[in-house]
Amino acid sequence: ASPPWPIDLVNGDHFLGASSTPSAMAGYPIVMVPAGYAFGLPVGISFIGGAWSEPTLIRLAHAFEQATQLRQSPRYLPSTVVPLGGLTTARAAVAAASPAASPPAVAGEAAGSPEAAATPEATT
Image (cartoon, rainbow, N blue to C red; front, side, top):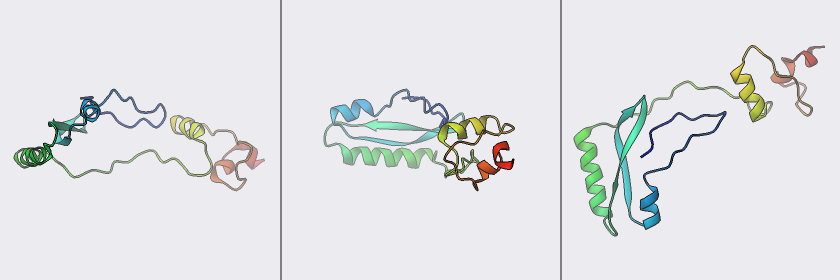
């Protein structure tokens, strides 16, 4: 299994593979349940079974969850707010990386948008 990672809005996710790939390729059932946390991110455990073993897997997964009580309710953490409509993805990434610098206006942006109003070209 691959370790958890935070979502990277600028560079994209650093996906290292999944534990479900062999099961999916073979056509065997798989179920994943919470198994704790690593670096504050959730980690799961996968139970893979043979053909037609879904009832056994469901019972096993349920028993594991009941015995460990590791599941926690999701937390909604603050994240970077990317304004909709005015900035392109690349410009939003630059703006988020250096909040002190105002990105220059881009042709085609609405003149009344907050991004255009914050640029020197829009205030002259």
